[in-house]
Length: 181
Image (cartoon, rainbow, N blue to C red):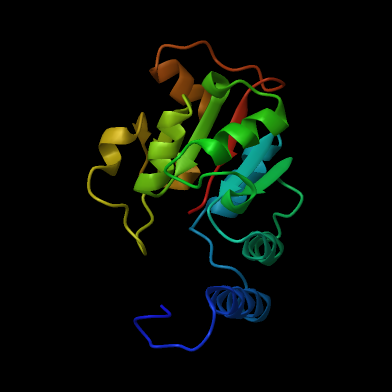
């Protein structure tokens, strides 16, 4: 942005301005949410420990959680800013699993982006693609997903495990991880 727009701001100043604008917008207008996402997160959080592992800035994540009323739904909230490598590296998902105390093969990653699916797959986790119609995933995303759903409301970890030939997860041990790019 600095070069393209010929700005005399530092990279840090540009980042801060973008973060501030997003936080203010979410406070003013509410955070954007995929249809059915809030209800789905609530339904899953009642049964499984959830983590949110995002590439967004921590302040933007916090503003989005407050704006959707989901600040209490996730046991772990982590930004890629907190790990060495962001998506498509698996670091953010692996750290979310570590903080939850759950093994990667017991984690379900729900994603809407190619890089998120790459990260989940590299972490050894089951990947679910729920395409976002406002920002469709890059070509090839479906090939990296273990499961593709049309709507987030259709997310059922038990059915996904059964379809993949695995035992249904114990709600006290299994984890559904919701990541947002």
